[in-house]
Amino acid sequence: MSGTATLIVLVMVILGAGTAWLASMLGVPGSVKEPPKPKQAPEPVPVLAGEGRLGQISQEAFAREAQHAIAARSILPGVEPDDSPGMQMKVLAGVAVSALVILVMGAYVIYEPAREAEAAQAQLTANQERGGKLFTTYCATCHGPTGTGLIGPNLHLQELVANPITKGLSGTTYSPTDPSDLSKLHDFLVKTISTGVPGTPMPTWGDQYGGALNETQIDDLATLIVNNGWATYVHPTAAQLAVASPTPAAGGAAPSGQDLMVKYGCGGCHTIQGVTGFTGTVGPELTHVGSVTSIPKSKAILTNTPDNVAKWVYNAPSVEPGVIMPNFSAQGMTQDQAKAIAQYLETLK
Figure 1 (spheres, helix red, strand yellow):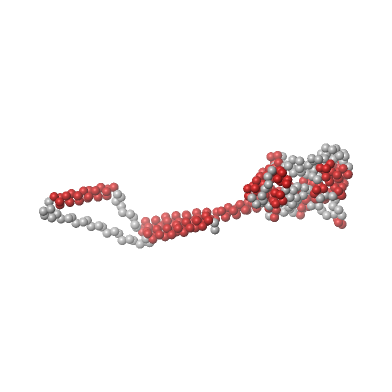
Figure 2: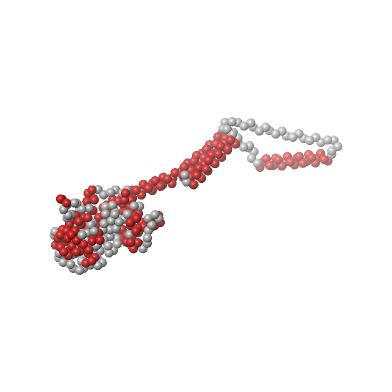
């Protein structure tokens, strides 16, 4: 029990004891106290013969006192205090109602924080579940189906705060156990998701900047990440996971170029009409890329040949420094996989 709750209980005990004492002082309801006996007027002091002037002075003093008493009685209430059983019942009823109000208020103060904490936790869980669904739809292709990273960084809290990219973008280092730091990290994530990161595959998601998500949705995504809610959110279905992981080829053969593009999250940046999960708008559309003469968006004007496309896919920054196309060789892509992707892209006419 907290210190506040203990104090409230002590106050309630004291009030209960006070109520019992007051009831004992008033008497048991229904009993009638014996009315006070009228006081008898004092007998006049006889004036003895021979006292003369002394007796006259005493009578004059008595007359003055009587006049003072009559004057005082005209000012003071003429009704004696009501000590009837009915009045006793009214007083005790008032004390009982007051005690009941105090008990109810005490119970409210004791249990309301727990109720508020339970409601806050339920709201947090609901926000994380919504954030998880949004993550599956919009983010899993780049950050992995459970946020462990792919093209984009690992978003699990310990790895995220330790990532130099996070410190570089925000200009600060966050502690995963400091509530103040976590609040700042939440604000940083909301801003980053809303505006995107220029020069990287991270697109703009805020609808105020032309993206697909409103402020509440972005807040839910940030809440999921800051609270490390990966174990509680609604995980992707098998069909959704297929968007972020390649389908094994029959007979143990190497994955196809399309499967490899799914594996490396290319659908998060590129659109290929008719291919599930390829709806990105950061990079050029690849629906008919096999029909163009040069690699799209390449300032180097590279001829669209399988070898050039393979080099571009494998490590585009080495071909054209500053391009936002990631270095997939750093993501574990092999040159044979890059060639398979290039051969697949050549078929898109």
